[in-house]
Length: 337
Ligand code: CP
Ligand code: NVA
Picture 1 (cartoon, rainbow, N blue to C red):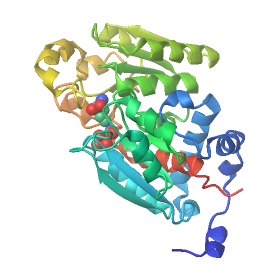
Picture 2 (cartoon, rainbow, N blue to C red; picture 1 turned 180 degrees about the vertical axis):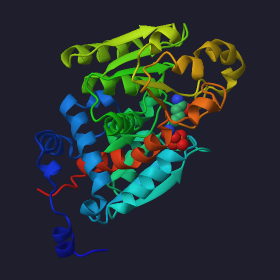
Picture 3 (cartoon, rainbow, N blue to C red; picture 1 turned 90 degrees about the vertical axis):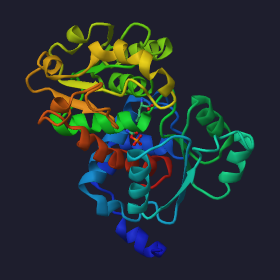
């Protein structure tokens, strides 16, 4: 563990840490939760992305920013990217992450979620949760004095969407005005992408089969925010029309964790929504392909698209770590002012 003097010498504020959005976000978000992208203002979304780019460029500047902090990851579902990107990113900033597997013992079963929160907050500085029910996350947040972060629920995947728009900014140099099309199941990942795009001024089109549209409350909220930020949220059930001229085409699995029993029913419904070369040909010639992963190859996306030069899926996966480092710096007061 580094001494306080060393820590203070090591953290030198980069210019981005003096950015207006970052300063405001650092003041407002310290000690807060991230249950949903809707918890964040437009400036706070921009701040996380700006800081994410800086963390990626200058990792050594943040080497001791969360020195000796403790974080627990409590996961009811499987994970590769989320678990490892949180663990690696946190330890890169001097913190220690503890993985607590809840796959065989869902939260709230052995003791109440409130009681879990009131214990865990005594030992750690942050709680990262991957759950089935979104309510598990909001209940933990309501009962915990330390920040709670949603690492995927049945309703949202905010850390994913932050990394995805960071990746778009990296690729295009901006996010405002981008035409972003999501094709597939209108659930957790789609919800967070809609809300994030709306806050950043991106035009978001969502093409889903009938019966799999995004939640109406998310649509309403995303549209309100889009209007305030000068962009549009459109819904369609026609994937061809939805991707016409898009700068980015994004899909997710059509059978999310917890819905495996619906696999047979969903396969024919989602087949026309597969992202293949013919569908990508309707997007702009410079369009990128995106997927949160894990992908079911040749189901929602073909190998030809997933492995093409248009695919930026592994940049998205890498940026999970940088965006989450930025988020944790803000929630845990890790910047030097
Ligand atoms: N995209 C994502 O959250 O991946 P994992 O399920 O592997 O964490
Ligand atoms: N929608 C998917 C995302 C996985 C990262 C799921 O919930 O399983």
